[in-house]
Length: 378
Ligand code: A3P
Ligand code: MG
Ligand code: MG
Image (cartoon, rainbow, N blue to C red; front, side, top):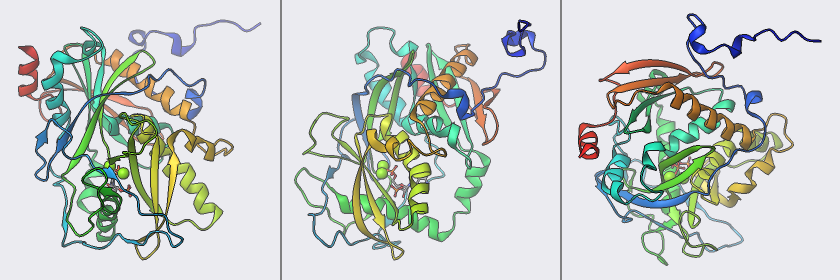
C-alpha cells in the first residue's frame, strides 16, 4: 500500500516558504472534458472612426460582399494602394481598456444579468482572452496582463512586453506591407452598405473599427468582453449578432502537405480561439500567392476547425485551451483579492515557463482611468 504522506502541492501556499504562487501552462495538465461556455450574446456595440474617436453606435460596421463565384477565382491585388492610400493607426498610443470602459460607463445602469452581475464578472478585450486560450500551445510570444479589482469586477488589460515593443519598433518593411495586405483584403470583401459593392479605390484606414460587446461565462466566471468584428452577412442563416458576423483572414497559398499540416496546427488554432470566444460562426480565408494576389477563397466554420487536427499528435485541443483559460481566471481571482483600482497585479508569461505574478501600485501599470472610477463611484 502507498503511504499517504502530504504531497508538497497539497500544503496551503502560506505554509510554503519563499514559494511565489504561479500557474503552469503544460497542455497535459488541462486535458479533460470541455468546460461550460455560455453561448455568447451581444450586449451592444460601438465604433471607432477615422480619427479613432469613439461612437456608441454601429457606424463602422461593414457588410460581407464576396465576389461572384467564377471559374477563375478572385484576383485581388493586396499591394494596391500601399503605401499611398494607407492610414495606419498610431501604435504608440496604448489604449488599454479605454474604449470598452467608455461603453461600460454609458451602459452600467442597463446591464442584463441582474443587480450585481458586473461585480462578479471579468472585463477584458476578446484579444486578451484569445492569447490565454492559445497559451498552452504557444512557443514564441509571451504576454503580460495587468489585473485590478474594482467594485468586485476583475479587469484585465494587456501590457506590451519589452520583446513585443522591440519587434514593433524594428518591424521590417515587408512585415509592414503584409499587415496592410490583411486590411486590404477586408476592403475587397466588404461594402459600406447592405447590398452594396466593395470599393477598393478608397483609403485603408486602420483607425476605423466596429466592436461587439459580448456576455458569456466560462465555468463559474461571468465574462464581459469586446472584440473587433470584420463584417456582418445580411444573408446569414441566423441573422442575429453574433451569428451573422464573419471574420476575414488572409494566408499564404498552400501546396505541400507539410504546409497544410502547419497551417492547421498553428494558424487555425489562432483563428479558432479568436472566433469561438465571441461566437462568430465562420472565418473566410483568402489565400495569397507570392505576388500578393488573392487567388482563392475558402470558408472555415469555426466549429469544424478542430477536425483538421483531431487525429494529429502535434495538434491542439479546444478543451485544453478553455480549461487553461478557466484555470487562469480562477488563479487571477484568487490573487487579486483587494478591491482597489490603483493596485495592479501583473501576470507574466514566457513560453516554456509558468505564469508568474508581481504587485504594483499606480503608474505605470494602473490602467483604470480616473474618469471611469469617478463615474462608477457616483
Ligand atoms: P490577416 O487577417 O490577414 O491576419 P483580424 O484578422 O484580426 O481582423 O486583423 C486584420 C489584419 O490586421 C490582419 O490581417 C493583419 O494584417 C493585421 N494584424 C492583426 N493582428 C496582427 C498582429 N498581431 N501582428 C501583425 N498584424 C496583425
Ligand atoms: Mg478584424
Ligand atoms: Mg480579420
